[in-house]
Length: 315
Image 1 (cartoon, helix red, strand yellow):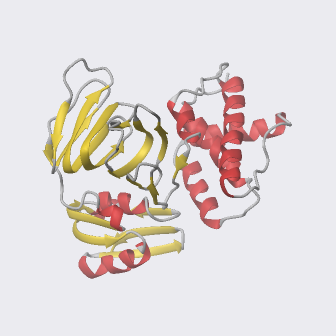
Image 2 (cartoon, helix red, strand yellow):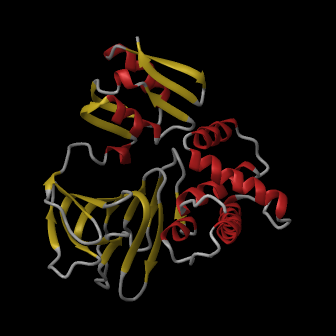
């Protein structure tokens, strides 16, 4: 019997297969795939299942060498095909498209690793998408709704002549804008919202309580059932919108994890230096310069195995 594998791991294996067979060799992509493959026995098992399917199924998608939006749509369709076969062969069942991983893959707006995007919505609202973000936009006669499946956004709402409510829905709950600037992030097990101007109302999907009104300069985390205690919004929490990563007394390991979101390939921090403290504002569009300057303020060195495989180590 095949080793049970979770949906997220199977999805990742299917996505890697499609990306590695899109007709465009890419060193950074190959290195990132190798890093993913060797990171966990589950990853290796999922990839072995993909390779077995490649030999057994003639309808395995091989290439999606299209362009622009067509390529993205074709890639998502190919991933779904492979994932369907993986589930059929490995788990004996097919999961509905409405489940979150599928909805994320089929989202109308997506950013990849290291990619940010600015959108001007039909009502004049400004929407900023951080790296690795997926969402859908639904405007109709009654509402203005952003459904955030993964990642992080910053919203500056515009006044609507029709006075339709503006909301962001995550897998955990709903954030309703009250004429405001705010950010929303979907983490693995919770959502987080921060308010820069005016206020929002936050309500988990399963809560029967009154919505929490979150004021300017506050942030809060919530899951499907409950809302945490509001906390002060850290200065620079949305610095990524201006292309900056602003940190105040962070662990170097946490800083490197965040910096890795904004560059291709693999960026690792050695255990012996991960607890060093770092503060400052850093340009996320020029991560090589950030890495070059680390040694000027901390007792570390940066070693490049390749341009896309970088280690931060002790001197």
